[in-house]
Length: 151
Image (tube, rainbow, N blue to C red; front, side):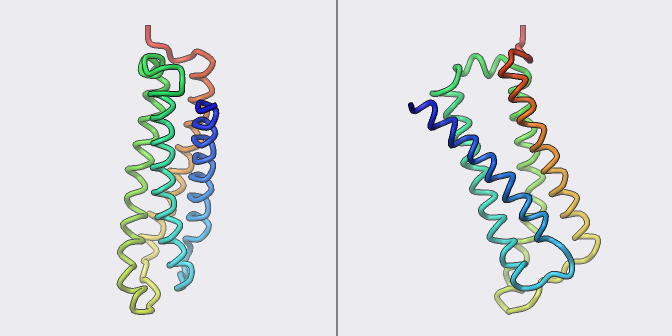
């Protein structure tokens, strides 16, 4: 039963992660207003927390509830999945820093100033994150069918 719950929580957190990043993508557009700027900060914090849950439940599955760490560590697709997850985490630093830099302006009741160049960079980064997140389940499906085993 614990294995099923761990798998469920892992999959659910992945869905929530993708949904939050999609919301972030839809909410971030110019011209910005106070409400959307505040919402973006909250959504981004929830996104970060959810990424932590994805990581924790994934580790739990590897260590205690999955096919055993030897299976996962001996599979190149698992390494690719983890690498893509780390890359997405690194990419997410840019939007997070942009949103966190708005805090003082928002506390003062001012709409954050975002240049068109900065907005385009954040939007393209979020889109790249979404694209990379779409590849991870494909790698998981292939891995579950025996592909990627290191001989």
